[in-house]
Amino acid sequence: MHIDKHTVWVVDDEAATRSFLSDFLTSRGYGVLGFSSGEHLVRRIAPGNIPSLLILDIRMPRVGGLEILAELDANGYAIPSIVLSGVNQVSTVVKAMRLGASNYLVKPFDEKDLEAAIDKALEENQRALGMDRPALQAAFRTSSCRMLQIQAVCSQVAQVDVPVLILGESGVGKEVVARYIHSQSGRREPFVKVNCAALPTDLLESELFGHERGAFTGAHREKPGKFELAGSGTIMLDEIAEMSPTLQAKLLHVLQDGEYSRLGGTHPLHSAARIISATNKQLDKMVADGRFREDLFFRLNVISVEVPPLRERPEDIGPLCESFIEHYRPRYKSTVKELPAELLAEFVQYHWPGNVRQLENHVKRFLILPDLRQALLELRKTTVPNSPTPQSSVSLRESSANAVESVEKELILRTLNEVNWNRKEAARRLDICYKSLLNKIHRWQLGRLPESPGDQIAPAANRDGRSAAAVGIGN
Image (cartoon, rainbow, N blue to C red; front, side, top):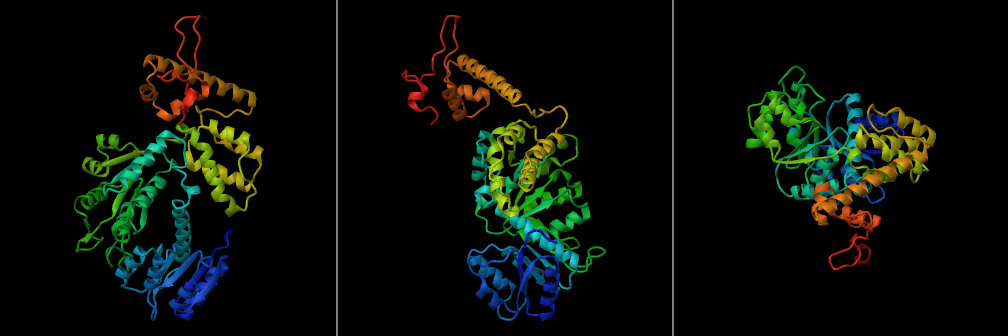
């Protein structure tokens, strides 16, 4: 039984299909509304009266599934939809997917396939919403200079039709970055994700390129692949390092010529999709070891974006927590509006081996079970060896923070002295952004290091002699 009460609208001119779907969905906790024609549904849709999911028959008298999807798209309604099709309607299915349908099923279909399609449609819609709402733009709701630089690069790259390779550890938000590029590109056709590690080679080839009827045992119908469904949208190849050499060669052909063929097919198909690939492996080393094609690597690596692990940007932890609370609080009907200061302090010190995904899970757990003591215990249970271990003592935590701040001040002062207080050069050597350096100088009222024991450390000053505070150095 589903915890969230989703409402599903079923549109099919066959009473038997509507009845089956209504019984199936009701038994699984969904609210169901049935329509015998497309006209009835189109008249019913209105702001404030939108279902969680649509299940549409493609072929109906007068207004069919394609017309409904086109009408919804024209009026700005982004409703996850599953289309039902008969045999030999592949081209129609492809059109439906490009109009925004989340998935399709060929009649007759199994209950398990229907359930999987519904779960996938709702999950992908939830993820896609994350790029439309500021609360879920977790990768770029940030005060980290490195993430802001990545955002700027992605905004520029989005406008150019070149492949992008996204690098980073598991859980850092590579898919969010890919979706951000797609959202900024202006491409109206879909964002399609494929996990290259989730399927064996033969199934992955069929998933990517589709297959013809009879191509292999069990291929009873022709099936479009992800490249076909993506159209001129974006296809994300996650965990690209796990792709077999055979498929690497076929993917290279797509990148070079924009052509491919279905499994068992003879006619070439054309792809205008933008390819974004992602991996947590070091592809350059895999190339050197002969485990990944060098020519494919260079094709994929036209632009590369490396997403830093969360432990290297602790300043993002607070904004990320706010994002997750804002998003998940209504879903879980939680009374939690913000994290307790003690828990947030522990979060900031923690190593986060699972990165943003692990942080998200801890926030969700606290929203559901807001027990501070238990939340701290859960965090400490997942501490990895040789990583900073959160301490429960406030005085020890404060002492540690003070020690770090003292070392940071000394390092900044010495670097500034070495470059004769050229703050841009100091920021470059310290590998921090210029504005962060100015803020630290202003906050700590730093001045030149004394050249002799009797010298005083004066407040930071600009070339005209005014102090940093006087000219608003943080601006």
